[in-house]
Length: 152
Image (tube, rainbow, N blue to C red; front, side):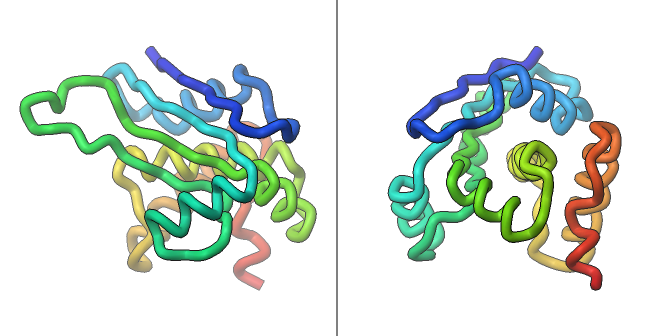
């Protein structure tokens, strides 16, 4: 079962809670245990502040992933962590990159959920594994490869 806490900290339009649930469930289906996470939708000032505080980058980014730091004795609880998504950045990126807005949203939510599961893209092998999984999941939704333009 997926427990999703969707927090709207912006007035900007965003996908429905049902869409977020669909994207999260798809990304988390490899996990057999229940999953609990929060998605917080923010505006650029809050996105910038969080990115500066946690990554020392002085700009708002599309998605920040905060995996739960659960003590070993509580490892069986379903809490995965939090995603913070800056709505304005998502919209701007989709427009600048010529991507369908819904496809870009789906990609970023799936990408963030995979980070909560421990996937990363620090080295080339990890990046390839994570990107391949993202491409597969997005294809199931009928969305194009989000990295197709990166290879040109």
